[in-house]
Image: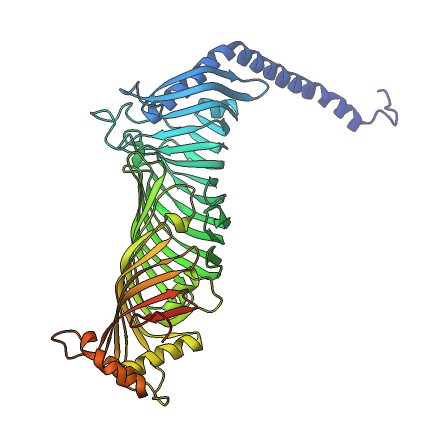
Length: 526
């Protein structure tokens, strides 16, 4: 028997013997892999055709549309990749309508087994335009295409998307959403997808960040496709609207369908200002609204605005008018228990509002479209009541006190307390001029009826009317002048009235420096 050397141990001999089967196994695996690649390569045109057919059939069935694709390419090696150009969806039976969906180009990636199972990892879409037709304009009969084929897309990137909701009236402008960035996740054939989006807002300029869920797509009535989510909007410059300024921030939520979205939210403008007045106030609002794509209107069901110590409650709508570009805002607004000085801060150029008191009013507010000054465009009509009003300027209040004392027949009563005034009237604002009608101004001993105008631009006012005194005109002064005026008492007394003198008066000047005139012998301060 031969003797083994130290290097020829039994263990080394066993290792050499094992290498033979291992090499054969590795060789078999490599040959099998090459054979599989060869088979796939040979069948690539067939698989590509199958994939192309499945993609087209899935899209047509899901959107119940006729589909036109200029180029649809499927590449399987070295990785699965699909791409297409100029993709257009037309709703079945509506070849003359605007396309439902247009895509300039797209690319998709995944793996071969996922592709055959209609599962893609990523789809990148460029130039996506969706035009949702008005509800009820679809074709009659059951939904086309039956149950759509199953598919799953893990992520869709569609930056630069434009979504338009077309109203039923052809003359109305569509509701357009310009989506700067859009990421959609877990898109399935018959389920909702989640999304993160950044929308571009034109006026005031800024970006709206939104996240929520969308779908499933309603092929029969695209406008019924569900959507819900939340949004934030930060530091939008209100200065783009001529006549006002401030930095607006807003946040809220929405839900509903594409054609009818219910929204609720909160806005905050810490430095809101009407430019003419130049007095910033902290303005906040809470709102509820319905965005109706079918009619092209936005219904403001509830708007509660708060500034300083006052609260304004309003409702109305934003709508298009036939033959007018843009949209008109129409509101019904009410203030109950507000403060007059708060209102004057927004309209009078004065650091200290000239009047203080409790105010209530109701008004119709109309803001037409256009790029003009908001104050010039703004139209108001309504009625107001002010109680316990006092003038901020001591000399003006002193004149009101003197008027009251004279009206009572006590012109020299220096010990009488400071009087307060009550105002009632109707108003209208057009082209920056406030017209006041049937203004009643009451202080003890005097009732005043006025009509006049106040120009917001130059702060000038001019009112004319009558002052009805409790006393006769001769009792408004003392001494020799009073004796002379006794002869005139009958001429300034209204027939059949128990009241004293009725005197024509005027008020001119500015709100901070008004001038009161009695038209007896001359015009001037009394």
